[in-house]
Image (cartoon, rainbow over all chains, first blue to last red; front, side):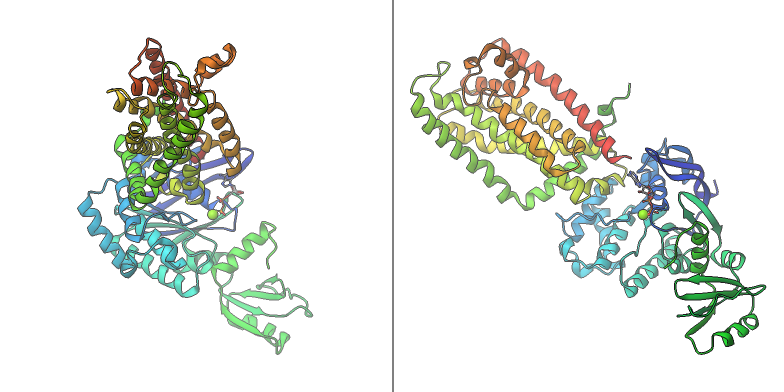
Length: 303
Length: 259
Ligand SMILES: Nc1ncnc2c1ncn2[C@@H]1O[C@H](COP(=O)(O)OP(=O)(O)O)[C@@H](O)[C@H]1O
Ligand SMILES: [Mg+2]
């Protein structure tokens, strides 16, 4: 029972469509784990199965050591869920959203009120406690969703695309909160995202899904090292020049941009002179490079 | 056998019920105006307007006494049906309230039961406010008048369950039009505005198959104190129909929400 979440050959069918196609993975206690993938990859479906919102078509899935098909009620009392779409109650104000929700977990009234004040503090929405939900900004709504998922002090927090559609500074803010939670509450966090930077920043381990299958999984830094070389050279508007094939260098075209990956900087130097005065960026390789290469393999056009 | 009713957790259902109560209490003034205005106008229209045309007695009652049960049942049942169709559809589809609740330990059956319980409560509250009107307009002559809440509650359970089950099958809000067309047109057969006995025999059979007929007939018995043996059968019929439709509603909500 080392894993907070353990899946074996997990399958989900919607009629003819196989949304999740026999995936196996383990999420360790206390880590932040990311499920990456493009739209339609099967991230939400996987998250919903973990959250006991969606029955499995086949396979095994245990959360906190409990079988989700049998002990779903128990599992749901141990997890906090932030779904992809906000579903705050527009008929209630901010505080009522938390108080009413706490009843579904049978939290006694006094405890709920104290917890509610604590969480409003945590997400810095104290001043908006009496405000209607529709008066909140996108970032505030998302923070309130997170607070609502934490009411019953869950062991595992599931976040389906926590920052999609939010401004960069708001995303930063939410990331800080999630980091804080993992550090101070020893919470296991499972998040799905299609942002590489999000996964790279928050997750200790991750898996990438495409068409319901796992394409790669592991520690972000290791994946980058194993799948692409350490450094990347990006050249913009590179079209008139042919993509170069050099030994020991991986080359890739993304729309108008050429990208070369190499194990050390020296190997990239000759290319830099070849492209001359075009706009170039020399940088460490990141998860996005892996992601785009993997989805290229899955015949997905980039750009 | 897998019985949905057995999966209800009353504490959970009550938590759902209290969510609706909270919203209702914030809006209670507007919530109560409609069920009071409507019957007043219905009484004027039917009791005095139509009643004046009729002159003679209907089933040994003045028309005003006869129509009281119809006005009462019509107002109460309609509100319940609206709550479990448009109201439930809004919460389920537009506000994703059901989705939010199902992410907690509350299961689909308790959620559906809490919703129906709420619709019934709303009907019962309306009933309490309308009954004095029925008395004021002279339609209630019996000491059994307060008992009319019993058949009305069964009516609310059966129609609320039916409404919620249909809501669970509706994927576009316009489909409710068909349901309401059926609801309102059958309502004319159910003895609200004229006795079922006035209908041709085959239509009487149809009328008695519609449980609303039993609700109105039982209400009228309570308001006027004229009880008969058939009322026992009607009560039994309402019980059976209510349980069956409740089970159907619970199953439908699970089928819709848990995929
Ligand atoms: N309730 C559903 N009914 C039918 N198909 C669904 C349902 N939910 C998701 N799908 C399909 O399953 C696939 C995976 O969807 P999803 O898990 O939402 O992907 P992601 O979250 O990675 O974008 C998609 O093709 C989607 O259309
Ligand atoms: Mg998704």
